[in-house]
Length: 171
View: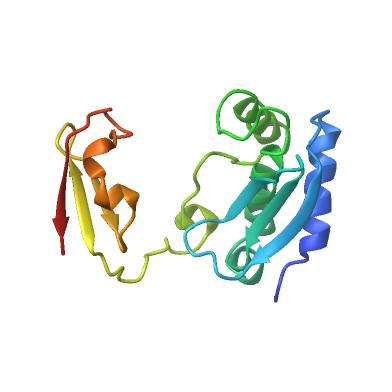
């Protein structure tokens, strides 16, 4: 089958979104990301108020991934450009639910590889140097290199439980 027509797919997505009266923000840049391994897409708000959207190349080049699955990711990212929609809550969730009910999509916060029709991504062995564990809830954080967090971990709160009780182990 070959590579999917990205220009056509993104225009179809924009037409479907605006067809429901949803107004996306100004998208300055579309990029096909050939390096992305653990995400399908990304929306970034620029300092000038415009948006840049990246779509993983494997969505477009893998024949096992349907055009519908590809469009779900494009729409997911475009919805982030709408006013007050950078998070996966509130208006973003309402807009995603509307797209799902109107067009039969399954747009949500996270989509696995299996749901896209391919195997789940398994990261290659990551050379871990620091393992930090929260004393409050047991959350574990792995880091490859030194950072403010790995040096001054006693000053940071856990994002899960709020505790300031980290322990560090160097591997």
